[in-house]
Image (cartoon, one colour):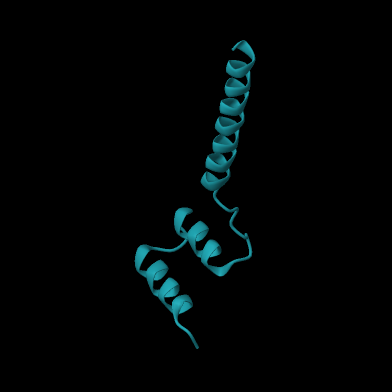
Length: 66
């Protein structure tokens, strides 16, 4: 009986461990590419180098398919 409980406890621990690994791997956000034009615009807007209108205009231009 004790052996059965031990096996169940080990299986439960493995399942919880797998669930935690899956959960944490899904929460990771990708690191933005510093050379991506959108990221450059975000940084410039955050630094106050461009205003909101300029930011939105340029982002809109980047979103269009040429």
